[in-house]
Length: 384
Image 1 (cartoon, rainbow, N blue to C red):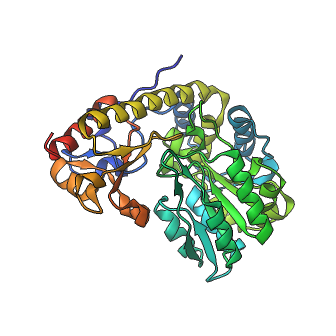
Image 2: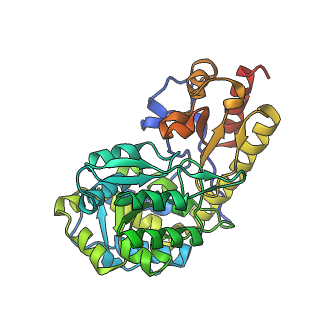
């Protein structure tokens, strides 16, 4: 059993990525979705080989990436994805925009489900469309898609939906039944569904994960998935993602994208992703999931003991915690005060939509010591 543990804080502060350069050294950075773990050995080996060989040119016209992802999806999700229906690009955001440009017309409306990853609002606008907000339903124990609200939006003219599966920031893994119902609704109204599945490899084993394109014929007809190794394996800076389809019409849309969309894929990103999706990295990913499981429970225990006013629901997937701090009376954007006075950087809740008022998003993809120190600092600010 491989143990995956975070690097020491002193080593992390030598990194030059956004997480470790945005704020001064007295701030604990738990905002952006980067993790503090060493790379999976297979990825490190692949990158070292490429650098040693000077293999840093353009990506080739034929690569093993699609086959590697198809094998990964079969092993991890039980999904038989077709490598011939995949095409790479620089990152998930670029894939989303390029697909949206082809499936919507300027001014048409695209459904998003707040609270949701803040760039979704910008990506819809970049594609020339407009955002149609259909918030998630909070049942008191879980978040769910508002299928009736989505149906109403499509009936009123929305032509596409940008799905976050697993959902960021709540960590919700949408059920197979919910996704199948969504697909049927979209098919009824001729709407496209673009599913951002970047957090899929981080679904906890007990929860499972269902790819949108794997829930039935309707999903295959209306759906596009955009996937990447970047969140699970901390490869965002290397720029590689895949656009995946499952039907002739949707595949034709992706095949029709300009060659430059594919050439923006990073060569090192592609090599790293192939290594990440290989069976050689499975033990590392399993070890990471065990560590994240321990961290998400640790955070629950710390908040219960030190900040009982906080409301936190353990996520199904990922390393992002969606925490309601409105009970502390720190206003709509409590992360501002926490940064200023506790020196802990969290993602601003209102950035995820109006539903984020009073909330923060905390990245627990780090060491237990850093998580503990962050909660202690915030608790001290609350007078505890």
